[in-house]
Amino acid sequence: MSRVKRGVTSHAKHKKVLRAAKGFFGRRKNTIRIAKQAVEKSMQYAYRDRKNRKREFRALWIQRINAAVREHGLTYSRFISGLITAGIEVDRKVLSDLAINEPAAFAAIVEQAKGHLPKAA
Image (cartoon, rainbow, N blue to C red):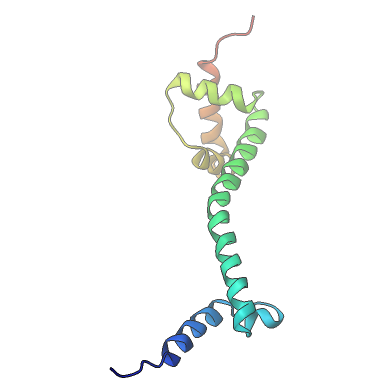
């Protein structure tokens, strides 16, 4: 049986890692040992932050809606409660966009939500 030389395979693996490490600082971009660690860590961060991005955007939309709703004399939680009782199913991303770009349409939604809130005693 003939001997298998692995130079081609390891060169390809190294090239793959170094391509992923392109743009890294110092030896992290050109030394395979360090680049491999840096690339593995960067992949962990990327996976984690794909999840976190969704959280951060939702928080941003809620802040924007809250600010816009307070101009109409409501709080965010009362507004969402009013939307649910009114049967309006619009997600927070769209509500945030409406609050910024279509204030008249957003005001109409707020009025509908206000109408379905129980009166404070």
